[in-house]
Image (cartoon, rainbow, N blue to C red; front, side):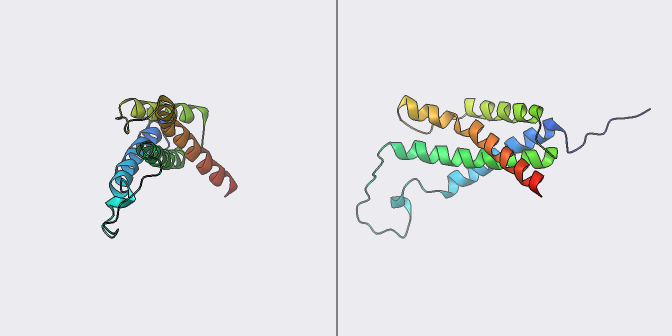
Length: 138
């Protein structure tokens, strides 16, 4: 009687670990990246001007979320030992699920919030594609 062993190459396992890596990276980056240059301790007490106005928090959140989920996609592909259609669907599912339950980064236009909302799916697919291309080339 054969028993099926849960392997690290499971798509479920790879997508869930990819999600955990993405959320952990996002939390780490959000605690490291200052909200503005005026928040840095070595900046003089001179007045700080924000060129982008209210655009800055949404753009920062977009970049952090994109990079974090790209890292999650890379880890997901490395654990699954390759990119498949099923893994792509599962990675997209966890990215969309994480975005649905996330807090909006701040005030902004509807277009900026729509751009922010696609950061996680775009990042996780980009990371998965890059990892798969590097894996195939190696």
